[in-house]
Length: 471
Ligand SMILES: Nc1ncnc2c1ncn2[C@@H]1O[C@H](COP(=O)(O)OP(=O)(O)OP(=O)(O)O)[C@@H](O)[C@H]1O
Ligand SMILES: [Mg+2]
Image 1 (cartoon, helix red, strand yellow):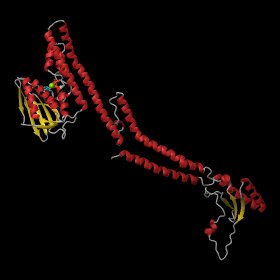
Image 2 (tube, helix red, strand yellow; image 1 turned 30 degrees about the vertical axis):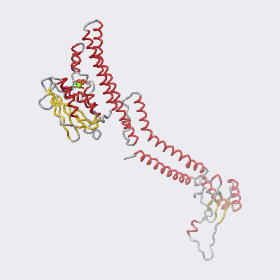
Image 3 (cartoon, protein in one colour; image 1 turned 30 degrees about the horizontal axis):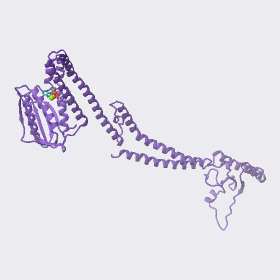
Image 4 (tube, protein in one colour; image 1 turned 120 degrees about the vertical axis):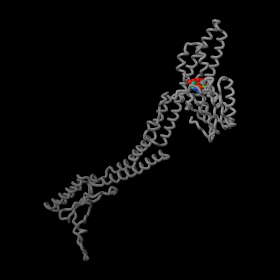
């Protein structure tokens, strides 16, 4: 559902407000009603006055009763009296039980008292004969509802205030809980805890705030990957630089001791250029990985580009056979000639480097729908299947572990071997370059009888309308 949080807030606030009004209304009515009756002990006192008055009248006569009434008036500071209610119908009228049974001169002691009347009501306690009645204006001390005003203030001001504060707190907590977790994760992340994430802390929520949490997690994933990759890249680069630096030290020693000067100078020049290309490749790789640029400004003929690369390669590897199977023309739009050129060149050079001189490398380009597929297959040793993805990692070389141990400390032999093997940056760069023009690159060992590696590069004919790579 869209705008889940909005709906939830509407539900909480809407329902909360209705419940608040209902609660206040019910409490006010309930409290008022329960406060409108004379307290039990006062009811009993009034009934006792009636009984006593009746007893005095029956045993001691009217004068004694008059004295007693005065006594009540004085004691309760109110008016009291005894009256008879002999109702005589005339003009052929008849008294019905409905009238005689319920006839009363004042209010019964157990009746509800209206709290808003200024005057206290007249209460009635009938004698046994039902025709004589003790009447007494309700003494002020017995008037119920003394705390009504206070309760009304409490119910109509304090209670809504408290309930609204509670409601606001519920809404605040509902909104702030994920925000606090987001803040905590952001703080932890900025303190260097790169695995800090928010979504796992909000497993049962699915609303706009969890969307923000998911966006944060996505950003954290990408940033932490970038940081870790950059750290790894830096560590690998410094490791790779150690060998040429050691050789430069050695060559400088030779020059200082006037030993093999010409060879030492050549070594110095070679190592300097190795270091330069190593640093340049690493910087380009780092740029392509962090910026994820879209290199899509040029339109050119792919066949022309491949031909130029193949001509150069044939010149560099004159003893290898390079078979090219290309169409007349393959125009590619919104791409980058430099990026693609470097990527294809590296793949073809790898293929030639690993293929024995008497065997061939084939380059094949075909068009399918809106994609060009370029395959470069060689007759070299191939790559262990499990490492087919790893060869696209920076500084990864299949033979690295094997030769690294052998090469260490072997001086010239090591230098020669290094000359024949690269730094393991070529395919890593090629992958980022192909991604930057919207393509995809993959490696697999040949499945026909011949051994060797096949690198397949898929390129959209128009990189802005189609993107094959999920960078
Ligand atoms: N055609 C191939 N046949 C066998 N192994 C290959 C082939 N192409 C690449 N590899 C393996 O993949 C590794 C990585 O290749 P990549 O092109 O990235 O680096 P490199 O050629 O060693 O050095 P660089 O390209 O930086 O000069 C190589 O070291 C090699 O082990
Ligand atoms: Mg290479």
